[in-house]
Image 1 (cartoon, helix red, strand yellow):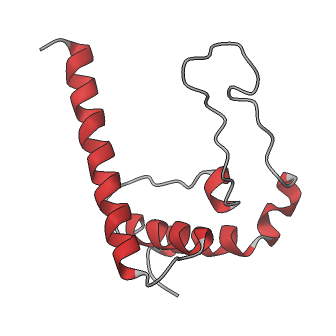
Image 2: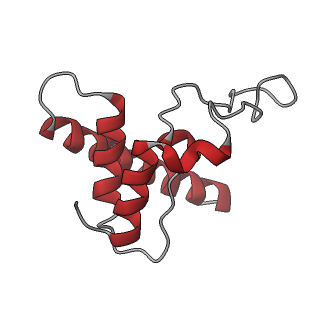
Length: 110
């Protein structure tokens, strides 16, 4: 097995783990859950992981639905260049950002 094949295999396992986590979160949430509720539940679960470092993305805590990475592009816009929907100065005022920060800081509910 080449180094690339080994990395690809590990990446596939991580994707499967994340898909499993998302299915578990959605199974706990009746009906059609709101996007922010799903994001919060995923980070609630991740906060319980036995890891030394866990971070949240700004896209997640702002519930941004568009993703900047456009597969198959190198220099076409908007690849890796989409602005956040709010200035960074307003980030702390966003309820979802505060809830996710609390979950990651304390690693517990509430």
